[in-house]
Each structure stands twice: as C-alpha cells, then as structure tokens.
Length: 265
Image 1 (cartoon, one colour):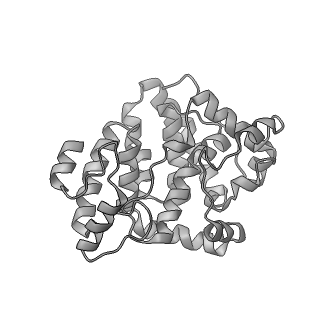
Image 2 (cartoon, rainbow, N blue to C red):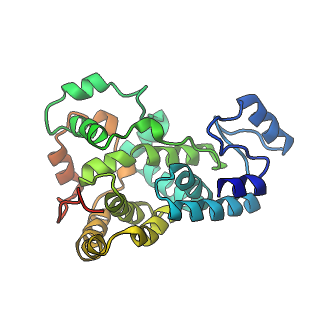
C-alpha cells in the first residue's frame, strides 16, 4: 500500500523511514505557492487529501498497528471536527491554557525520574507503569504533516500525545481489544472520523469470544463514560501528575471497566 501511495502522490516522499530535509520540503511547498505553516507540514490539495485518506484508511483497517497510516487518516479527514475540538478547548480555562502554552509529551519533555518517585496510585506513576508494562513510548507519535492550519495541527498532535493517558484513565491495555475500546471512547469524545472508523471496523479482527465481550459489555461502558466525561483534551495532564488516579477518575466520571481486558484479544 505504501508503494501505491508513493506512486499516486509522487511529490510526497514522506512514507520512507528517513524524512526529507526541511529545506527540500520548504522548496517543494513554496513551488506550489504555499508556505509551510509548522515543522513537518506538507501542503496538499483537496484531491491529494482524498487519495491519502483512501489509501491510509485501507492500510489502517488492514493493520491497526500502522500508526503512520492511522495518523494520516486522522489528518486528512478530521478538519471540521478539529475545529469543533479547538473551539471546545478555547472555551475551557484549562484547555485554553494548553492551546496557549502548547505542551508536548515525549521522553525529552517528561521527567521520568520524577514520575517514578511519585506515590503509588498517582496519575504520573500509573502512566509510567502503563508505558513500562505495555512497552510503549510517547516518542512513537508521528508529527502532524497534512493539516493546513497551525493551531488545528497542534490539536491533533495533542490528541495523539494524550492517547496513552486515556489508556491509563480507562485501565485499557494496548492489545487489539483494548485499543478498540479506547477508540469507542475517543469516537464519542471527539467525533473524529478515524476514531469512528476504528471503532466500527476494528472488531473484525477479534475472536468470537472477545467480540461478544466487546459488544455486550465494553462498548456500552465506553460510550457511557465517553458521554459522561468532559472533553479530555482540556486536561493539562502534566500539571496533574501528583493527583491520585482514583480521584481523577471520580472527577471525570470514569468508572472501572466491567471486565479485565488484559489477556483477551
């Protein structure tokens, strides 16, 4: 699929693992009459966005762990929804502060030693435990490329970087079932097309047992919690590391999962 995308969108050689030099990208963008709006930005026409969306959707549905394809799908299909999310953040004091200060979540911005020293049960300690147990890193989140608005580009970047916070809050692992449950929660919370697609088509890969558990117990739970909780993009997580996770869940109205998802697939 990557080869097909490269052939159709020949100017955009972003798919290989080694990124193009910034100067080359800048020249390419200016040659089209459009300047770069932020680092890694690749301006695209409406037709190119449609082609990117179609190709990335097919690959993301085939392999949900292709995070690069999931990222492209979100950027090329979510413009209107990102505006709604941005406006929600602007109206919320904590969300507005996030938009103003633009915090980022990566190993270069996190004080892992401080998180390790926090009390058991705190948000920061449980987030770090989630990363360790599931062997994931915040550095795997792809940079935004195809959103032609600098502020909206940050909104979707923030959405990606707090994804693991949602896993922590919901008590969901990173197996396929856990990811689908989080996608249902995100679909209700954000309305992003890629979340809706992932929630609807992700279950195709589940076993019959896991599918039954998902439909009967986990989807209703995720929808209920997604509707009850305030927009979680408005949480300044970095300033809540010391808050007990249980207290934060109570503040947000998030209840415990009805079943243990670890071990199911």
